[in-house]
Length: 323
Image 1 (tube, rainbow, N blue to C red):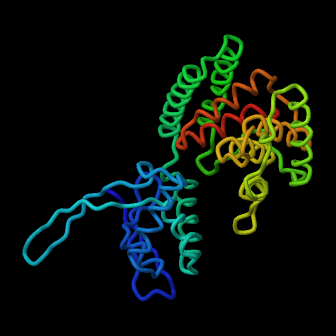
Image 2 (image 1 turned 90 degrees about the vertical axis):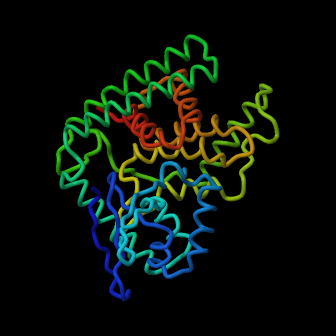
Image 3 (image 1 turned 180 degrees about the horizontal axis):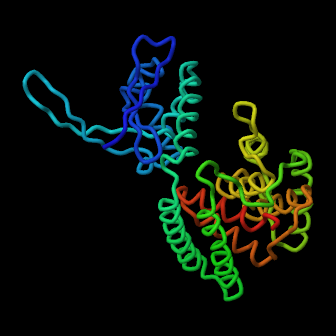
């Protein structure tokens, strides 16, 4: 049975019941409307846009719960759609509600408390998570090899990446029940990759590729302010703290976001690899992967599903963290 906890807003006359299940919280559309003080139609509209924009996957953030209620003298059972914290936060950002901000702060603190105090984090669950991630990695490997018909050298590099990731599964079992520490060797970033330096590097790459007939005029053409948004994203803070606390996490997200968000008309994967290496050089980080391995890693990210994001980020961090 799911645990019920209560969120209370000092400005709200009535509390909202929040269902806690699967290490996250769940609300119906009606509860979200009550929480954010908007009409239910607004919640429906925002959720449709969230899923249409592929910001989230509906199957991963929405599920049905059985609810029992008494109507008169009858005991009635109904299934209703609930949406998890990711969907709730996405809607909250879109409605731009002050109560939404307070709820996000509260929900984040509740989830952190449950995770760090061992509510859902124990060695048995960590072992299960390692198995699940191993299966996801193998599925990703098979899909990448099949889709891209990789030649033997690159294919072997992909296999090497997956094999190397076994170190991260072992690290999962070594985590304290009171903390989710990053792998040893992670360090705070010393600088920021600014837009001008990134643009200059991209222009240099374009000129080099064009001279060899490997790039068209569309290569590196930015879609609006997409690159600036990504560079700003990896430097963002939450409650005064960096969202990505280490240079390794920033580098991993930089590579992932450029590949998956397609900020350029053409050349996204090549530019992602370039800026990834540029950031590693800027942070004086040891480059732990060769050209062929970087190609394989880039293809792994490109072929991955949104549900594999955390898996890919951990893989990248594990590869570039100095031991």
